[in-house]
Length: 213
Image (cartoon, rainbow, N blue to C red; front, top):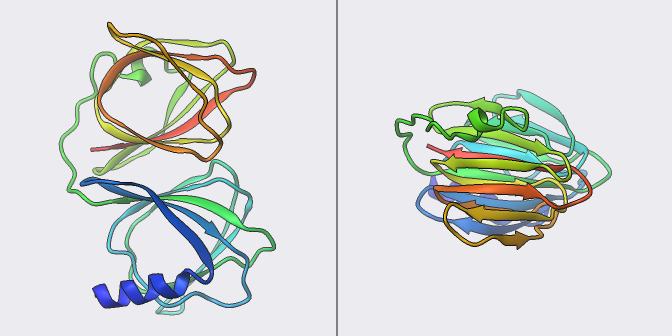
């Protein structure tokens, strides 16, 4: 099986550009640019369940070994759960490249109880669960300019994908404030922390946060 996956990945580089901004014992994160093509990629399979976050509008087509075809219109900020599904081919039948952040999940799920300062409890207007399963809780965060999110706690390790350029101030509990300016599509790894966040930009602060159980 490893040989099949390796050969498929090698062939797929002709159709897509890939980099790995994050890899650790819980996740492997791939930043992918899926280029338009008139041919399908090599037959391959994914050994891990994945969360897929799309950064552009476009199309994706998946053809499975049994002949089943999934045509997927995609748009910026779209998030899907992509479980391992066996051998398939993928292609971009559209006219423009599509950037995708693929978060592969390595570990087994663990029990999780949200803390009293869970951000969904502290600031429910800005934190919404996109979906949740035994491996991840995926949260969309959207707050307006000038908004300050009170002290809250992230109890899980997480991958954060920034959907627009941001300017923000983060103040850890009992610590010193830091200002950050992540770019659109930037990916960051975060560990458990308590902090206050403030949107310093002129537009909405919007991210997708993939918490790993």
